Amino acid sequence: MIGRARFAFTVLGFGYAFLYLPLVLVMIYSFNESRLVTVWGGFSTKWWSALLTNEAMLQAAWLSLRIAFVSATAAALIGLAAGYALARAPPFPGRSLFGGMVIAPMVMPEVVMGISMLLLFVGAERLFGGPERGFLTIAIAHTTFSIAFVAIVVQARLADFDRSLEEAAMDLGATPWVTFLTVTLPLIAPAVGSGWLLAFTLSLDDLIMTQFVAGAQSQTLPMRVYSSVRLGVDPQINVLATVIVVVAACALIFSGWLTRRKV
Amino acid sequence: MRFVIALPFLWLGVFFLLPFALVLMIAFGSNAPDSVPPVELGASLKNFKLLFTDDLYLAAWLTSLRIAATSTLAALLLGYPMAYAIARAAPARRPLLLMLVVLPFWTSFLIRVYAWMGLLDENGLLNQFLRWSGIASDPGTILGTEWAVHLGIVYAYLPFMVLPLYATLEKLDTGLLEAAADLGATPLKAFLTVTLPLSVPGIVAGCLLVFIPSVGEFVIPDLLGGTQTLMIGKVLWDEFFTNADWPLASAVAICLLALLVGPIMLFQRHQARSLERR
Image 1: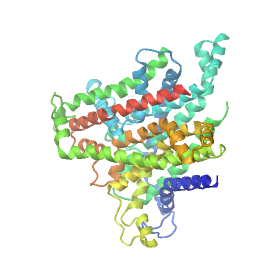
Image 2: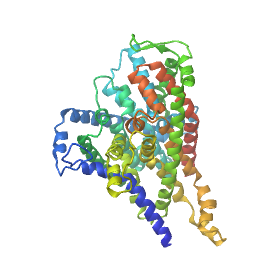
Image 3: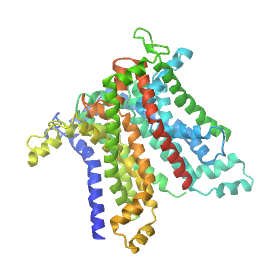
């Protein structure tokens, strides 16, 4: 028994160290006085103030946040419908195609989705004269790959709970729509909420698809970060990383609280 | 119900399925640098022929598959014991342990890859540590090699490996292990004959979740692999953005898709089945 406990401790200790050490080091070095990553030049918050006054970075962050909000909301709605259809709809023609289309974006290499969506938007521009590449096209691209993640959480939640609750409501005379609004939706709301958060995070972080569909005018936060880190380590990016890790930890705790809360 | 099916069906049909038809169409065209967009439609196979005869592209395909496969294996070897340890931890402690695995996934992918740049650089923290501790006086540079790409993939995709493994291991009936022990099996034998076979669904799901995206990975080989490591996702990116050869990039995308359609369908079927079984 002691052997097993020691095994678990070693394995998890090593695993978590592997997962967190790089992030912790980046966070520590965000307070480094020196510009060089490799030299510790003493404690300083100058990179923090540099980032907070970096107009281009802040603008990119603001754009990313707005896109993330729009695409997460759209993905939550469509993903809710998709997850509900997968879990509850009677067999319909094209069911397996539907299932495939919902799941595939989860694993599809992003370069493939990126180029295909760009070609779609270019084609639409030629045929209909729009939409102009920028906010809207990025939001559509993000929505498309986020749907899968919402649908899976919703479907799993629906598979877990008792269908007899819905049947009881219908037996008592509720229409399917009323049943959905008063019984089903409140039960799966936490799943939709955490799906929304996941979609929001994915959108905020996406580089590859965004780079394909963004057009010349729009620069999102990951695009800025990428063009900066290509040239090497940048102290301001260390600061940004620290902010992201802290915010992500808060979001995750909130999301965990949402899904674990018993309704 | 009809509307509930139609909304996602239409959205994904227009924005996910239809675009692939366009990619296929463009892949048979040829490059036209002077027109906007730089494409001339056609029915030539020359892009595909180039992809399968040019040594550079062949090497990129093979490197991508090899790196993805070995990284997946490494992620499995690291992720399995972790998932096992979490599944055997006290029930009250499991959510926290699991959350610690998931948390990095909620931070930025780009930032997590970036975090390794400062570690693996020639004068990076890893080499400083190696010199300081005297383990190696002249350690080579890991950044810019395949080692760094492997490390990056394992690091970035580890949560995807641990989660499905945990899901199957957690459901495992410990009574079976007790029965095996009662019948005289050593712990190792019980693991090999009971636990391991029963966790195959989790192994399959985890490996697919790591393998499929890493074949087409771009950010990791670009930031950690340097110019030496040629992976197919990076080839597609360079053809598109640097050379502005849209048809060739489309042909790469089509081949990548053809290569991965089998694993993707396997994953989809696996997902559907695991949800039905609940």
